[in-house]
Image (cartoon, rainbow, N blue to C red; front, side, top):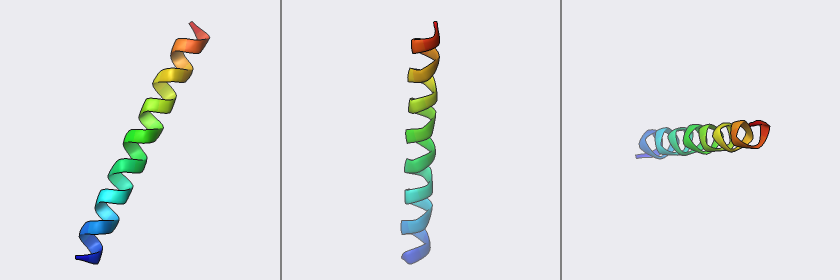
Length: 29
């Protein structure tokens, strides 16, 4: 259960970083 929680946290963090990168690209453009 703990490993599943860690996997979900890492996945959420990766999606959050991806969204931030996309927003940053929009700002640059």
